[in-house]
Length: 468
Picture 1: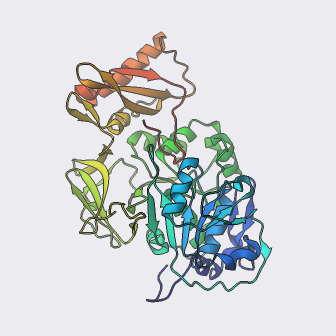
Picture 2: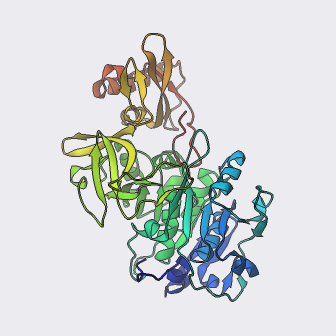
Picture 3: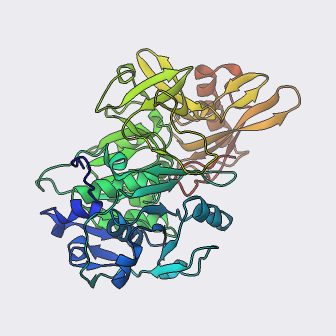
């Protein structure tokens, strides 16, 4: 996505210039669109020109309809605001006010949404109708994404198309048949990255639905012969529990968004022995920092200080920091803190430790459990719990304690073919095995004081393990 100084180039320009667009489709459970049809038509009917220069919020349930609107509006709208499907209704007004939204694009599922000060609505059903417009890019559209937030209103992060596409290396030709898919929603950074990869490479993309089960999605991805698929580690831990997972035959499996421990890497290598398993570090603010290709948790120490494509990494007081042309421009809002420091580094607040020439992620700076004045990162404990071959996923959390203030406890999901009762003999034996692994790998104050077997763990709409 390189352009001459002073000249705007849009997602539409990149797509319409592709010689392979006839092979590219967006495939959802309800909506299927060939992008070659979009070159000669519009999913927004005769109203596209009305949106030129406007700040447009895309609020659709159907991801295919959202993707079509993004393609058409980039380079034409002043601002594209992506509304994630799990946005609390009470935060919609904050979103429209902060991003100065003057137009909504809906599908029929969400056509009843409204906010003060927004009167212009466009309703799309994803159907391509014949239409002729002046498609020339007239502005460098601002892309506004929200961060996931457990409390309060989400932050609004501004990107450009260049910062979003910076990590993407375009392939030439169609010698290799690639069909992309992702567990992510494309209104979030991780999903948007996969959408842009597919579009710029003119590859088909299989999209999920908010109300679609893991089983149904995996079954549909398998029927579409998906070759490349991405998600968070939590997405994948849930997926490998499904009987439909074995029906997929991907050649490329990608993870990002959460700490990737050795347990999930080993599980994916066992389920998909023919796939290349990659994990990447990325965040909405910092963009994609780097990728790890050696199927090992953490990342080589050589990554730090490396200037790879303009990306520089450093560690300050244990916190990972990134300077890159892929980072976001700013947070929206007059009172918002700057994203970058004075040296243009983003403090990711992800904590790492150097061990034997490799950095390992131990947790978030703001997620620490305080046990008698000693810091415990829940993610570090989970990575140890997940080493046991019977454990699929786990979550560590704090429980109040009158002496130490808090102690660590853990909920654990075991493989579906193991039916351990909480008080059963086999269950107690498994609990003892798991805790022994913890005692061998963790300091005593980090070992869970209680371990409970549960059927499932909550995963947020962002694909990350839900934490309180």
